[in-house]
Image (tube, helix red, strand yellow):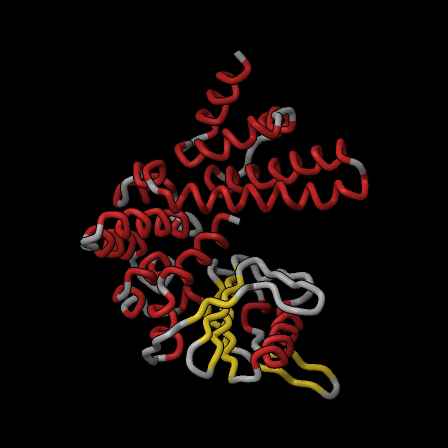
Length: 296
């Protein structure tokens, strides 16, 4: 969820950078379209529609190749709905973020007996980092690009971030860079080049985190309408718990069963508090100390 919201923020704040990189063109009067389409609402992990003069750029970011329904079918579904609603040229691009050898990241079309639909696929770990280093909005993605020296690339990105003159922009891009870099770099290495203080000081991190937490709560509430308010609250807590465990796993690696059992006992409020501080953790010991603190 954190990666999805981070990329959504970057695309919405820096649409020109993405259009320049993906369409090799300059665009004005860009409109950010809503991500929920007519008919039965459909949403994906991270979907952004950028509408220029007579074209829509549909971006789909995927951390993992697995998808339900399968990604090719989703891309066809999106194309049909977009074309019905806007009746213009649609460029669809799927950007896979995390290196994998799965065959799914090489699929760029949906095929059925009477239908074939194609879209572009970018495996970001195969891309030249140089074009990504030229624009603030693309700097976080540059940490995931092709390199023979990952540490040098991370340092180069950090230098580019430090050269951003406007302080609020620099802080926001630093936060997004740290979050996306966490897909491939250890936290200790990230902290060598980028200030972890930017996380707590940045309003964008709080917005990203809160959006993820709200979505987790909303899912639980929606399920609870039919099953009763009491069960709905528990569903909300469980959604929050799953989100926190995913963030901890990405931050610290696997969490041992004893700590997972203690996490299961936390209230919704405690889980929200944990979600705000877990990015400061560097080991399971930090998580254990935090749990001991709230139990005392």
